[in-house]
Amino acid sequence: MTSGAPYETDPTYQMAVKQLKEAAQILGLPDDVVEVLRHPERVLQVKIPVKLDNGKIAVFIGWRSQHNSALGPYKGGIRYHPNVTMGEVVSLSMWMTWKNALAGIPYGGGKGGVKVDPKKLSQRELEELSRKYFAAIADIVGEDIDIPAPDVYTNPQIMAWYFDEYSKIKRYPAWGVVTAKPPLVGGLHVREISTGYGVALVAREAAKILWGTVEGKTVAVQGFGNVGRYAAKYLAEWGAKIVAVSDSKGGIYNSKGLDVAKLFEVKDKTGSVVNYPDVEKKISNEELLELDVDILVPAAIENVITEKNADRIKAKIISEGANGPTTPEADKILHKKGTIVIPDILANAGGVTMSWIEWSHNRMGCWLTEEEALSRLDKKMTHNFHEVYNEWQKKYSDYPMRAAAYVIAVDRVVRAMKLRGWI
Image 1 (cartoon, rainbow, N blue to C red):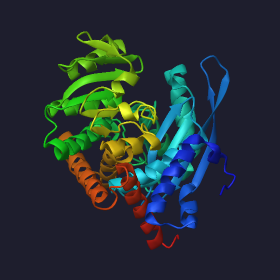
Image 2: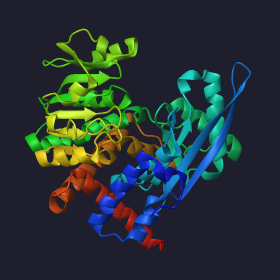
Image 3: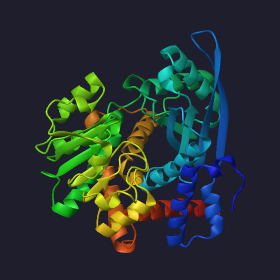
């Protein structure tokens, strides 16, 4: 059944609905409940006119999708990218509903996006765009309504502009309206590292189940951005050996292990890990996925593990740092091989979990030390991993772990909707 909504033809949306329907089938949910769940509660499209430095006016289009609020305020990032579409934003807001439900935090799912290449804007133009976008969505966001955060090509500085613009409009300092703010305006230092830290945490816990420890296990990380670099850093600190990393320019391999601190330095100074000096060989992003390693962390882009290469993947544990790096067909192939694929909605939930910690402390007027915040994240994500893993093994072991994660998340949302009398 189609409703004629403009986002329904988007391939990303169709994949999100397919995942929802698979979970609904396992749960035995009726079609009318699926129909309710597959649509967002609200999608706002806004026009953002920006006066450029050359004196001309450029018009950008932005969206905010609020998928489901049964478990709490909408929560999800805002991305700036030239390829952003309404369908992508709606899909991501649906995935945030499941991610937040699975994480056991009191949020629904939301997502925002602006169709723009931020690299082509000056700092002044970027600030004007950011302030005007947030002013345009100000009526539908708020500390108890919808709490945005960074995503692709947005950062703490942009969150500070959002916070300031919203506070001007509402005429009070709205500390909790966005998360991942700079620490001087209510953020936490550790928010930047939290997604990668969470990806490393769940890989560590899976390694304990398979081998008793993560120490000495070999790791390949595809994507050395914010998520991949911190996943590598913490896995290395816990004794794993990082043997391969890559970014958009290519990858490197050294069987003896790579120095993660030096990788940080090379990436930050030269723009790419391919300039790291001590390597056995340069490799492509595709080759990295098929290396003979114990743990694979795909932390770059979506759909990199497909039915075409899944048979050649040798890692026993895959901890998904990126959103949607494994296609449903590949998931089934890997499951048959006995590979543990820790799904994105579980593995990369460290960011939103830390955002919840930041938001709750903003609301209470408290401050946390870095150690306290990381300790809480460790405890929460470790608990979540074992809860999902045990449920998977007990009830849903015929399916990939992702199916079990979706079933748990969708079931929590449906039960909350029933309790509230929505269905």
